[in-house]
Amino acid sequence: MEQKGYGLALLAGITWGTLGIISHFLGKTGVGPFEIAFLRLLFAFLFMFIFYLVTDRKKLKVAKKDIKHSFLI
Image 1 (cartoon, rainbow, N blue to C red):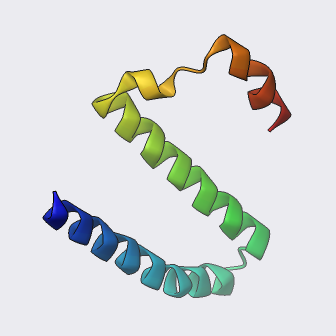
Image 2 (cartoon, rainbow, N blue to C red; image 1 turned 60 degrees about the vertical axis):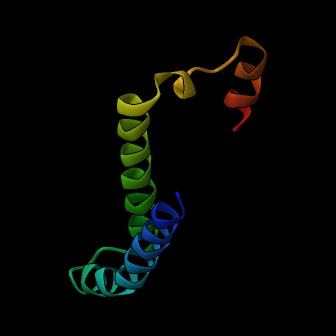
Image 3 (cartoon, one colour; image 1 turned 30 degrees about the horizontal axis):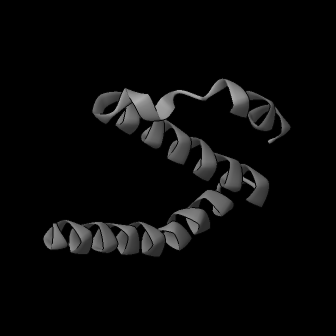
């Protein structure tokens, strides 16, 4: 389990480190900062959604009492 944590920390560091490089090249092509932020959130959402869809579908369910809070967000 400890090795998995180190691997995930390394993966997070690599993705965080390459973010500036990718943003720089996207900025040169005319993509603005808001579009870059949107793309970051979109890809993170898609990755996490597919991950939980494959590993644990129960985490995707929203309890009835939490639906109104979800709409507020």
